Image (cartoon, rainbow, N blue to C red):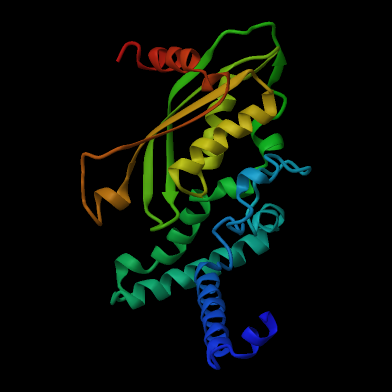
Length: 267
């Protein structure tokens, strides 16, 4: 009976099913290609975010970018060649916005900007262990909160390559080890001197400190003004952005509240 029923199916049933399947596969292909990305500014795939990679690699670089080791290991001659290539790119930009690159005020601008950009992004080639932390981790029987606040940072928004700047507040509760206080500022500076988003910057500082010290917890709060909001787009000059990253015991409400209370004391 079932064989008989099967033999009298509508003649177009298989055709419709095949068409629907093909359409679904086509849509999936379009969707897949639409979200496919060749890479990010950190040369990482969306399916493998930086939080899934080691905080500090064996050679001491922290979340290195595609060209980190090349920049860090280049000779003075190679550095000069890099400056020349950057200057050439800047000259092209000036020409494309309609400027006269031969006028007095712009003659040296391409080279000046090239050197400035390499300074703004020097955090890529900074070795976190050799250049930042060095030997400044000490054994100390202290298990109360340590906070360094109002660390000034200047960074570049990776979406528009314009500055964002503000202050970082870092707190941690030691677990038999403390770090030189100036190293907290240097840690923030290293990650800020890259193309960044504020959310990632907050988390990178917190995760690095957690990995290096193995404390009971780490808290990072950043307050910043973004020129991509102030000078373009919505142009809201009074706006600021606050982000935080809480790890370990700072995820507990009581500890978090103590940190935020101490942070705001005297303001």
